[in-house]
Image (cartoon, rainbow, N blue to C red; front, side):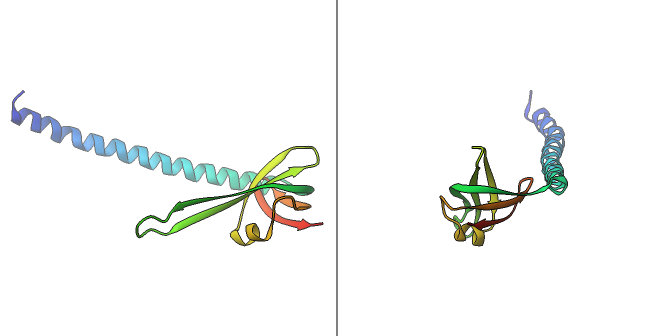
Length: 120
């Protein structure tokens, strides 16, 4: 294979490779959108429940913040019900800061959507 043949081979391969990468990235985006819509619909169709619970764990997940990028933090609290079952829900930083481990109260949620926690 001489230099000219290799150059023609590479030029013919580049559009196929770029197209494949585009299809893969676009496929991931479509998958993420469909998954989010399905979860949103499932939450909307779930009953809104208010159940006695205890806060057993808190955690925060921080991403970014290196260089010139801003940091983003997601907050989670794990609730335990009288039956021993546990449920981890995502909530706002304001709500997260107002709650402490071992708090007892009534958790109101719908599917995986946190609504409120009223301490006893």
